[in-house]
Image 1 (cartoon, rainbow, N blue to C red):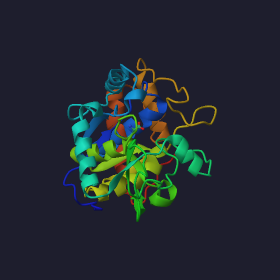
Image 2 (tube, rainbow, N blue to C red; image 1 turned 135 degrees about the horizontal axis):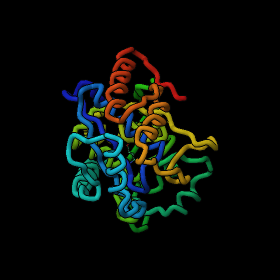
Image 3 (cartoon, rainbow, N blue to C red; image 1 turned 30 degrees about the horizontal axis):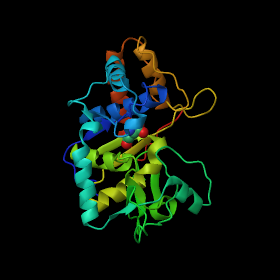
Image 4 (cartoon, rainbow, N blue to C red; image 1 turned 60 degrees about the vertical axis):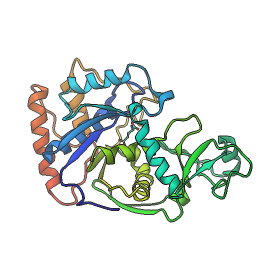
Length: 303
Ligand code: GLU
């Protein structure tokens, strides 16, 4: 169900995984999603995406929330934690299984690697393309994971910053995991269920997640959930030219100087530097954002 007009009200979110503190790259996504919500006079929520328990770092959630507060980015509703929402993910999986859209898979990672020839670098949340081995049954193997059927998932969608996008999910990703072999629900399922449950009308996040969007829209279609609008912000590169991420050791933002951290994030979004305080800067940027996005086909300018 593609449904640009389904939502009567703007609701956005920032959805950090608590794998470490906020760094310069994640602050860009946080600021952009906050500004977009404010510019639309909408609501902005924060969801802690700790569905991937093994990767979650104890205390990182509280640290991220305190960093956001120090930057003046306050949510309009109580924060939610994915770890408390497992029954919602299970109910969605049950619906997909009942509709024969999901099936159990007995393949180990090694099995998939052995059946896969291409060895291409993979972006965040990417998986090896699944060759469909268990589509027709487990062939005597024990079930390890559950996968979503992707036959017919040639997706086209529009990104507010990057324009028209397309991905044939079956060809690029294959039937992807919904419930992992270690018992964790997959990011793709959790994010789709939560966005729908929370009434998220607009997803604003880093361009490193662009590659996940086709999978998520397909999953929304399979679950008959509305599809939000998407805007993927420029990825922030470190001095070494590599993407800043917790995985490659990006520094936590310094919340003793929140305006400095925000100015750096604002620059990545093409917004002018501000002096004074956070409380003065945020309304100026909100107005600049609203003016910029009022113009059709406005592109984000990465600096
Ligand atoms: N939790 C995800 C991540 O940090 C982001 C999810 C999203 O914004 O859709 O990779």
